[in-house]
Length: 248
Image 1 (cartoon, one colour):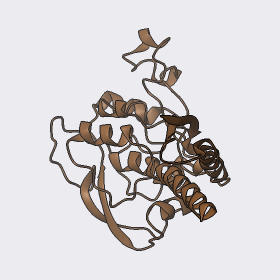
Image 2 (spheres, helix red, strand yellow):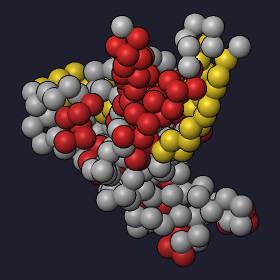
Image 3 (tube, one colour):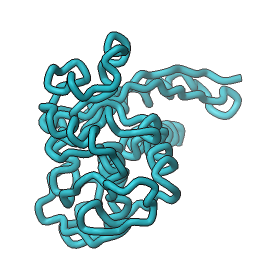
């Protein structure tokens, strides 16, 4: 009883600093809305027109955040310190990029910043993180003497990957709950924090994620980027309003 179509959207085409390609399905009940195929076409056209010419980079998303070092105490889940971060701090947005401004409703003041804490890493991984250049992965000769996964490089070359500040981020996924070795900060010897991953996903800084590290990254990685969800929802609403106006 539905007319339905799908669209494949990449978050980076909507001003989100992430290469995230996902399929979305839109279905319309034929009994409730006449000429549902026309409405589908209008929705898809509206989404297409909302693509953002201005591209955002990983650096745009995270460069203003406080610098941190990897946490170096195993099984210490309740830490809060200036070295590895706090569950909550006040963060000044004066040096924000236009992207950060867009996800924080234009604020340029001090706002609550949640979940910006670096997770634990052993000394070997911390050294690997520091040796890699941006864009390098497990195949780099610089880390051959330290890499414990050399025998799996053929299928696991991105077990370690240092992100590039001036490019979009690789897809944020729930796999980050295991480790962030594939998401090494471009200039700091650690993986991305949950807040940095949330920034890439376009969550505002005052959005709170609850749970342990694993839960935080799982929630963030499984989410549809709010900024993209807004594009889809707004496009559906505009097409419905247009149809209502035409029927009056």
